[in-house]
Image 1 (cartoon, rainbow, N blue to C red):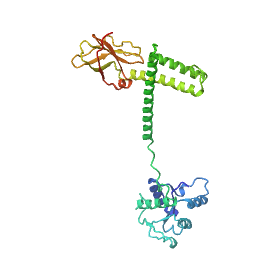
Image 2 (tube, rainbow, N blue to C red):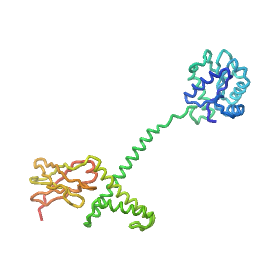
Image 3 (cartoon, rainbow, N blue to C red):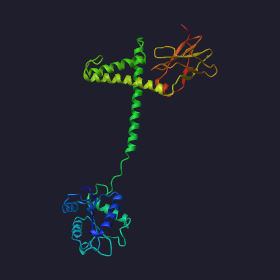
Image 4 (cartoon, rainbow, N blue to C red):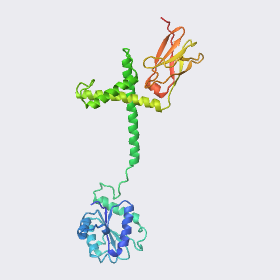
Length: 340
C-alpha cells in the first residue's frame, strides 16, 4: 500500500484522529483513517488489508479505545509486526499486553489545533516507517518536488546555446564553401549559395529521398549531403537575421603599422573582391588609425581590407569571421613592396 501510517481509534475520538491525520499530512506523511473508505468498500476487508500492510500503526488509546475490540485487534497486529506507535489521549494506560512499548501522552489535548509533541511523534513514526521498508526509502516524507522550472530554464538555455553554436558553425561552413567556389573564379556570393542550397533542399524533400542530384549515391551519403545543404542554408539565414535584427555594423576600426603612412588608404572588399567602401578611408599618419565606412551587402560582409600606398604595391588582409563577429579592431602591419 502507498500509505505510511494507519491510525486506529475509537469513534468517540474521531475529532482527535482527524486533527492528528492532518498534522501528519502537513509533514509529508501518507495517512489512512476510516473516512478514507470509498463507497462500496467492504470496510472490514479494507481495514484488515491496511492493518496487515501499513508500515506504521498509530493507536490512540483512550477510555473508549481500550474497550474497543477493533482498536485492540489493530494494536495487536502492529505489536506483532513491530509497527506499533501508541499514543494515550487521556489518563488511561494501554492494556497490559501493550505496555511493553513506550507510548506518548497527549493528556489534556482537546483536539483543537495540532497535538502536543507532534514533532517528536512524527519523528518516531518516520523511524518506524523507514525500518519497515528496509531503510531504502525516505523516512515517510514525500520527496521534495523537483524544480522543473529551473530544469526547463537550463534546458532552454542549453538548447539555445547549442542552436546558436551550430548556426555559427553553419555560417562558417557557408563562408568556407563560398571561398572554395571563388578560387577558380566563379562569381559565387553567399546569396547564391543560399539560393542553391535551399533549392536543392526543397527538391530533395519534394522527391522524398529520391535520387536527386547531387544526392545520387548511397542512402547514407544522400543524408549527409542533405545535412550539408541544410547547414549551408541555416548558416546564411542565421547570418542574415543577425545582420538585419542586430546592431548593424557598417564601419571598421583599425590601426596600421608601417614605416611611411603618408597618403595611405584602406578599402573593404566583399567575397567577390568588389569594393564596398567607395573612396576608402585615409590612414592617420601620426598614429596609423583609420575608420572605414562600407556599404552592407545582403548575406555577406567585408572579407578583406586592401591597403594602398602611392609608392607601394597594394596589400590585402583577410578579415577572419570570428574576429569580425567579435567586433575586434583590425591591427595590420604594412610592408612596402615596389610596384611591378
